Image 1 (cartoon, one colour):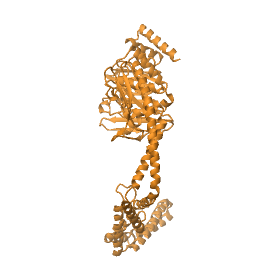
Image 2: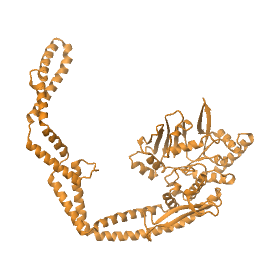
Image 3: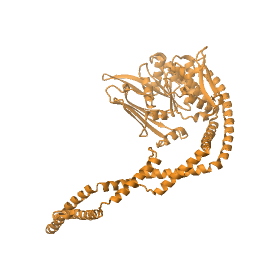
Image 4: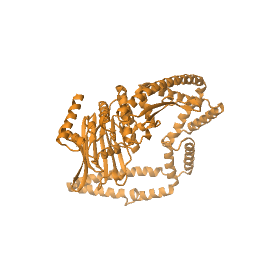
Length: 575
């Protein structure tokens, strides 16, 4: 549920922060006040495309953020967040998106940067916007199957089918691997055995290649290295004027001086620490110099070993492997051993696997037939129910149908993870027109009413309806071209759904606005030579005046009286 929405420098909006509550929320205002800007800013936050012209003139960037509460049982949302290591703290999510005049932007979910595609995917689990052909789950055919299954109450059966289908798919892949020719199998066994033997005899240890590279570099550059060490020794430890001898003289002088003036004690102690550190370094340096010698035989051994390990790496390690070189080679050995075990056990397991596959195939056929029967029955009921609701919503000649089409491939039944059916919603909006897919509905208002009808139909099974991930619906243009009793019916259906979900509806009809649980007014103002769009919640008196304005264009006595009658009528009805 959307709890808070903050908009900064978006179109005509300077700065707005709004708090929202559950239920049926209405946004109203005069034509041109900027209602579409509010919906547009929400669409921007849901991952819609954005151009830099949405940035308010004179500003560097536009930003929209939201505080969203998430139900504990919204498993799709929780799983999405968990898969990306994003915490849902206290069942609350904060989402932010901005766009700069450079065209670049950023998106954050709980302060974790994500892509716009990620944002769109995530927000589609929580929101549906209807009316502008954007973010409309209704237009995605893959969602038609989900809605029908939810209406039919067969979601658990579908999940069971999917689990069986996945199990069958994996077992078929395993059998296919087992059924390779004996020659291929023996060749593979020989290759794996050779690889294991070669890697075992190599006696590799982690970090060895880096150690060898360092040693090779040292031996190849021995003359230069010896020259540098000689120069360092002359200046640090060997000569009369070496750093160490000079430091020793300075220390003796400071010891004597500090015995005469205690003020020098701190300086003496600090230099004494420096001197002892220099002596330690000198000791380590002498040890290194004593061990330094050139061994051409060792250089040859190092290079041969390094060359051998590089060949093993090239032979057994994929270039994309993220492990260290030696770890990747040893990992290949472990995988090869496991594969040998599987290949050796193949003969024993093959017949058993065939029996399991045969049993699963029979199970799949039975479950798919059961799903098809229940989907077909539910599709007929849903079609009649939605067609009836659409008549009440101002589409008297509309026909709605849910097609349950058997999947076919080469004349045979084809099975997928959700069954053996393709599901598609079809509609004919006017008499004489053929049924066609929803995406071809020209009117955003009609499409919104179709979604409203579907959502209302799902109210016949509240438990299943609550299981849906989407928690907030936004309807824009739903009242386009309607009025009278149709508008009253639309308001009634919106009010019903608002009892279960959070609803936002942009409207210019008082008969819809009067049913709202929460009413917001969008206004355009001019201050200091600039135009602003503002929005805020209406109190009792403000709502009364706004409904009067929506009825007659102004808040006159007659209009106010009519508004009072409407408000009282629906207050009594809801009470």
